[in-house]
Length: 77
Image 1 (cartoon, one colour):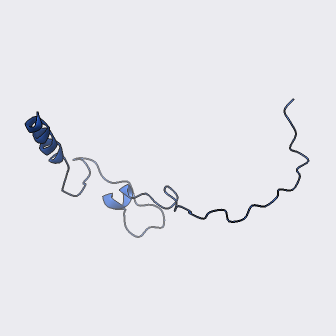
Image 2: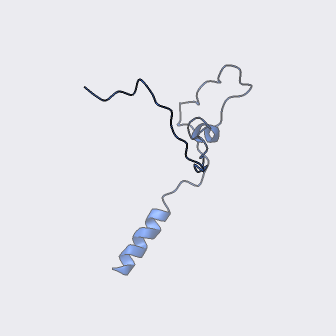
Image 3: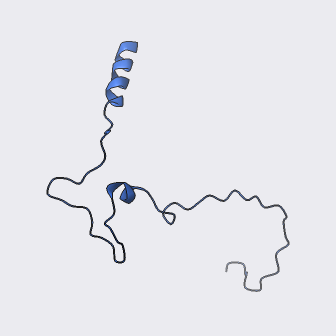
């Protein structure tokens, strides 16, 4: 049983692609965006931008504050 698990683990470990990504034969990368000086690379297209993955804020609420009354906060009918 251990031998099978070891062989399966080794087989799955070898499935990764170590070479850089390239477009398929006959296809090209997307066109250069307006205002860009050079076309984007495959690596830059995979990397999420700051809008796609914003930074995390770990700021903890240090003081609680009493909320002002809201005259539009009405109970449901």
